[in-house]
Image 1 (cartoon, rainbow, N blue to C red):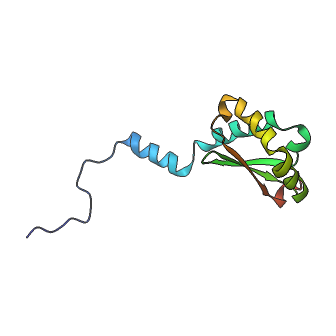
Image 2: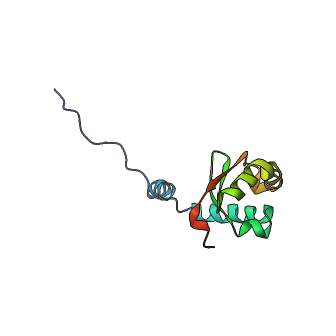
Image 3: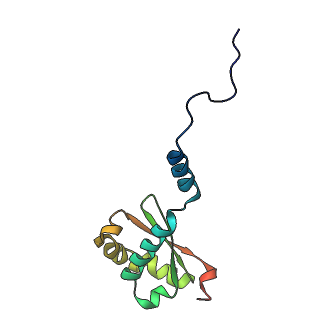
Amino acid sequence: MERARPYDTSEPDTLGSVLSKLFALRGYGRPQAGRVLQELWTSAAEPALLAQTKVLSLKNGVLQVGVSNSALLSELAAFRKMELLEILRKSPAGAKIRDLKFKLRGDLKTR
């Protein structure tokens, strides 16, 4: 009776594929993507908004933006969201953005 082996006996992965998986897992490619998103937000929002907001992430086509106070969050979500979304989508880098979400971030108040 042959015993099942507790480990994989197939060929080992190549170094390139292991490094690719590691980089994706650790997010080493994300700083550049974050920089592109921040530049995109900078081009869409006016300077007064930039001082009180920060791009947080892009997940499943939803750009998440941190906002320093609740009044600004309400204004952006209710009145400015569609305008900002249109501006963002005009850029080739913003074509994948399908929605904007604003999150209250108290740590942005000191900026």
